[in-house]
Amino acid sequence: MVKTTNIMSNSNKIALITGGSRGLGRNMALALAKNGTDVIITYNTNQPEAANVTAAIEALGRKATALQLNVSNAENFPAFFEQLKAALNEKFSRNTFDYLVNNAGVGVHAAFADTTVEQLNTLFDIHFKAPYLITQQALPLIENGGGIVNLSSGLARFSYPGYSAYGPMKAAIDTLTRYQAVELGARKIRVNSVAPGAIETDFSGGAVRDNADLNRMIAERTALGRVGLPDDIGGVVAFLCSDDAKWINGQRIEASGGIHL
Image (cartoon, rainbow, N blue to C red):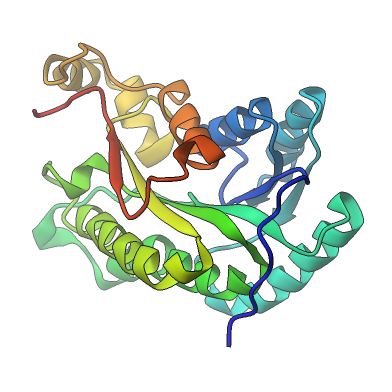
């Protein structure tokens, strides 16, 4: 049975972001800190980058810590949550947190005919199994009245060659989001997904950032005339992790500048 807690009214809010050491996760962490939220990030292998993010958050006047987590291995999750409980108590004087952002991910670009079982399993483990099980195991620690943000993708709505595995995984996240919103509604926990369009990061080998032809092609197909930047996404997540978004629930919010309208 899931433990329930009382809605927090006068304590600092805390957000947990998976994959928060770089790219979109880093931007989300900083945007949340600017909104007055304390932040816990996870990182896979790059501890120095994670330390840079926590230092930047603390420079904004918020508390922060970083925990190692390989989201591709579900066997790690129980031990991670024990570390999280200790960090909440020691760093934040809390035993719960308020917002979960399932952000960690990888990109795999392969033609449908060439996609391997290994690639399919990797994407499933990271992009569906991990958000499902991490959220499930986090439920006793999430405050009633809190929120969950799952990262989807524009590729769940439109289709580019090479993403026949990645796109459907993100479409599954959009569906999972609605089911979670229904089942967690009794605890007043809101669940939404954010679907970025093409963003200039090192995701998927930095193709959007580094390939001028691809960058130009996407910009031409986008109503606002450019590809996305990390700053275009962090603020959306920070908004959803705030009381200003208290009546937004079970929604897929695409932040893509209006691509393929």
